[in-house]
Length: 234
Image (cartoon, rainbow, N blue to C red):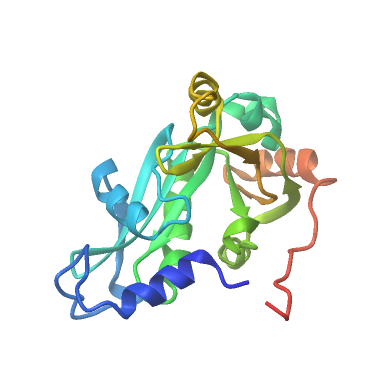
């Protein structure tokens, strides 16, 4: 299966009129590209256009973009997850308040092939300096993802997760307590739909100092598994 984002980028590359940009930057040299924090509105333009879910996460705390000649070519978003027990379970309750979820990310079709890896790796360094201890990321198999970018960035793979429901609200499939409550109120309407959540691959990246990483690895050691591989027939 080809990933959703590759399908979208290929489609956008073939369009004669672009929604986001009038011109491609003169240079997309990865060495001269700049990664910096951005705002919600800048991030949302690319997420709405390119990302699998096509929605912005509810509880976002950090937005980063990669720039080529002043033009944003990709974004990554970090935030928190509810209930809090989800964060506590990543590397232990001691560090739960310092765990963030990599909740959205996408690059435009013309961005350098290494844009995503530079964007993620640089943003991780910034979050590390800000005192965060671990990042967790999920890959939705329904979107054709196995986590190739996280493997390239040396995340740890800790298996698969699934369970719960997701609800079709205002044209998008949504999860979480808020979505469940809203859907419950609308369940007698004709447009009410729900389904089981898809299987997701789960990755973790450790930040912090040497002793903190050692402590978190002790918590994770029995969960770490070999990276999943894309099937040859896909």
